[in-house]
Image (tube, rainbow over all chains, first blue to last red; front, side):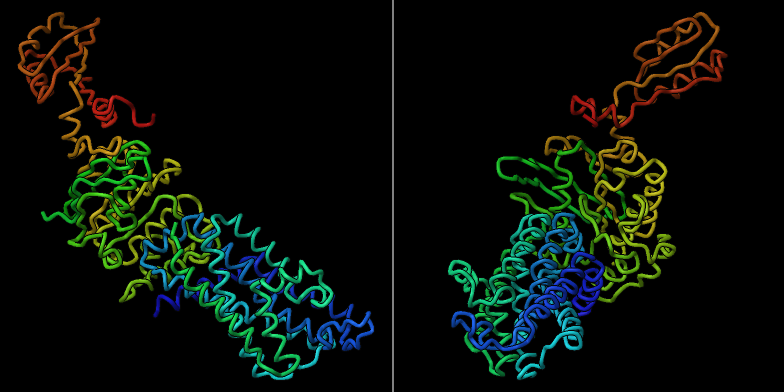
Length: 252
Length: 302
């Protein structure tokens, strides 16, 4: 237990010392949210745009704020975590840790806990800045939103750990993570309103693993309901990712 | 002396490449044991198998009575490792590294003492990436011994260090031994092996070609000894009658006597008996380099 605690504590500090990670986790989602919120305001769409009601009829800023909590989670899980694990493997840090009795469950759990903690800090910062500076309104159900956040952050962090486990080098992990983050940003509900996406992109969005996370976060914020189907999908992504990462993890 | 490591007929391949063909050695308690050989000889693979970091294809290994194949996690708590091609996170600070690695061992040894003992206290808040090569090695050695291991494996620890840092590192190695631990040293440096090792195995092409103390290896495989001195006395042919002398040659006042075994003492005694007391009498002894050359047919750095 001590070793898990110490490993997690050290890893969290190291994570925060990475400028790229900090930028992407804390600054980028906030910046994009701020721009989108400023451009689209928070007036619910009445269907004037050729009969298509965008943002599901909710205020755009409300819509985006919930979605960008998802992007903050994804920033940690896809840009921070995979590159971090792959770099450890490239540089022989994992060899070093293993030789000093760090076990596979301890290492992987510490990564999961750290990713969750950083996601929480990133999301909290996002909301702390968003509330006074944009027209966002409080979630319809704070309790359900927080539950959705915990489930989403844990499960999607597991997905990030899986990426770090299967991507061969730090370079590959960094570029794949960035590319996927931007792709998911556009198709998972954090970019253009999903109603106006071309069909091909909408299909990509439908299967992108971040989409159920974003929807699961938006549902309680916008309508106050729990997204049952999305939460099952998120849980499945988390369990499968964690299991696969555990089995496929290599120290070198 | 009990043997703390015994490796028998170790064999390990990576695909079609035979990394270790047939390696056997025993390491006794409290000694510094060296594996000496060129890069790619199979030294690292051998010690990594002994540490339970790799699984051998064939062979028996016992380290402190444990089988690294099945009891690796138990074993790792009793041993310390300095691995080749391993590193710490660049932004990790010295004290954090020691604190973390100490916490991985039940009973948590006093990492501050370890930091003090290895003169790292001044650098406690420095990040790993800001340390010099010598300081990094010092930290890695400190981490290897932070769990008070009974056996310490050090793999190529002076590669890339400047001569002063290398010598400082040698002192560290001796200090670990003086602390009661058994050491296994992997190196391709002759001088390092000769300076530090009580016994060593010369490894080449995945096989152990000779084992023994540096002195015994030199005596056995180093070839003949060459004694040189100068004298004005024209006739030194009496030296040829000494049993261990092979040839005597001279050029002007310079005399060279080739021989083997205890030849130096006998030549010295005979010279004194004939009233010759040269001030420059000395023997050129073979080095491990010569032994290596003789055993493998090529130099170590090739």
